[in-house]
Every structure is written in structure tokens, then in C-alpha cells.
Length: 438
Image (cartoon, rainbow, N blue to C red; front, side, top):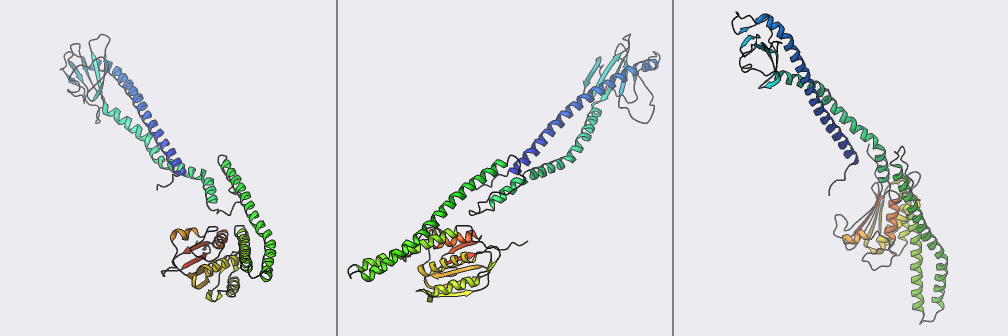
């Protein structure tokens, strides 16, 4: 399964890519413009130099008695960037600049600008048309000038580019920080926490999302409250008529003729089962409500001792073994008593052999013997009215009640079969939240 896409990563990469692309296009455009402008500048300088040199060269190098061709003496130690020659009307070179080479000016240059080989040329004639000065500039000079100009332009941008990308990443992260806070708040909620979201400082684009989630949770809360209220009210209202019906059934057992007595006894058993179911429904309503957390940590060991002692007075109480240590947790004592009683009753009713009850820092652990449960059945039995393979009577609500209380208190109900280290048995563990290590 592929990892989910990151909005922050996509925005940062998209903005960074757009900046790099636009910067590259701008740099290439600037390079083109710089090359054209510098070409015009160099051409203008080349033309102006040629037009200034021609009168000077004619005044010094047009003596018919002078040797042909004649090279002008060097004025200094530095080399020439521009070389030139003067030709007469027949095309014969009469005058050379100090560094002019014969291969550069092997052929007469046409009037005006021209490019040949590795040089840019400009040729200009005097008014009589007898003398022509041709000047040459190496193209490498222009390329070097363009290159140095672009380096001076690009180098600071390359140095600033990592900073710009870092600023994009930082700003994207800062802009989406509230979205991350909202996501973490929603992710940190469980199904029992339907309070409105409290994330502050959301941008205008996120407010409709938060408000929609709040409205959805409010509707869900009303629906759950109505369901819980109906369950609790129905179970509560049934207790009194069921108690009266049970009393009448017990009286009927005493007064009925011998032939009707078995039917009256079956009626009594069904009424008792219905009374237990009503009591479980009340416990389920309590488990799915919000009153399972205490304001401060409570010592749960005395509560478990009372529950275990009460279970020992039952018909199968002799099977109980307990090892009760200290445990303080933020669970309501009544809610913990309901959780522990349901786990112990489930083990006594549906298990075999000894039932071991352990309390310690790792939570509450209840184990019993019996055949190991199949994985699909083990995953299904914490649901409402789910039953295992046992033929014993039960409401099918005990583990659902325990799971609801554990979930509401932030605990975790872990069911294992077979018991670790054994080939058989069933283990139920109510595990409190562990303190975070800083």
C-alpha cells in the first residue's frame, strides 16, 4: 500500500519547482538579451575605433616610398585586442598593426560588419575610396565578456536559491501548521469524545471544514444520546414490572398443581434471565456514557477486592484465585467495578477450571481454562450479543460492557486465546494508558 500524499510536501515542491523554472527562464532570457546588447556595444566600439584609426593611419602609413607592407611600431608591452590593416585600392596591404596576423586578414574584408572564422570585422574606406581600413576583434573577447556578466548575475542567485527554497519550505509549513493542529486534534479523539473541535487560528479556508466536523459530531452525539437514553430508560422501567412478574411466578410455583409446576419454573427462569438482561443493558448504557473517568487517580485494589469477594459467594466462587496488587488510575470506581465484575462473570460462566484474577501496574488480568477460541470468534465476542461456543446461559453483553468502559477511560481491552505459554484457555486484559516518556 502506497504512502498517503503529503499536502505540505506537494506545495513546497510545487512552489520550489515553479521558482526554479521561472528563474531558469529568466536567466536564459537575460543571457540572450545580454549577448545581443553586448554585441551591439562591441560593434559600436569596433566601428568607432575603425573610423578614428583610419585618418591616423593614412597620415602615417600612406607614403609610396615606404616599404610595403609596413608594420606600426608597438607602443607598449601589452598585446592588442583589436588588430587592423590598411589596404590600397588594389587590395594590397600597406600598413599592419603591431599584432595583426596575415591569416586573419588573408582576404579583403567587405565594407561594414562581417564575421569570419573566430573574428568580428569592420571595414571602412576614406572619402576618396583609395584606402580601406579593416579592423578585427576576436569573438572570444565577446564570449568572455558575456560569460563574466552572466556569472556576476547568476552567482548571487545560485547562492540565494537554497535560502529561497528553505524559505518556501518554512513558509509552507507555517501556513499549514493550523491544518496539522486540526488533524492531530481529530486524530486524537476516540468515538466517545464528540466535543466541538477547539483548534484556534484557522485560516478562512479551514473554518468550513471545522464547522462541518462539529455539526457532524453534534448530530452523532444527539443520535447516540437518544439511543443510550432509550436503552437506559427501557431497562430501568422494566425492572419493577419484571420484579412483580417474578414474584408472581414464584408464588405460582408454590400454589400450582404438580402438572403445572415445571412450566411455572421455566417461567421463573425466563423472568430471571430477562431481569439479568435489563441489568446488563443498564450497565451497557453506563459503559457507553461519559461517566467512566474520575477527576483524580483512584486506588482500584479495594474495589477489585469487593468484586472478587462478592463473586466468591456465588455458586462457582470456589474456582476464583486472586493476586491483587496496587494500581492507581483515573477510572471511576463504579465503572471499574462493572468492568471487573463482567470479566470475572464471563470467565466463571463460560470458562473451565480455575479463574485467576490479577491486578498490578500493567492493569487487570482475568484468565480461565477451556478450549482455545478461533481467531474470528475471538475478534467477534466483544461485540453486543455476540456469543462464544459455550452452551451456558448469558446475555452476550459482558465483554461489550467491559470493552465500552475500557474504551471510555482510555484503556485497552485485549483478548487472547490460548493463554500465552499454554495450549488452551482464555485471557482478558484491561490495560491502562501508559505514561509518556519525555
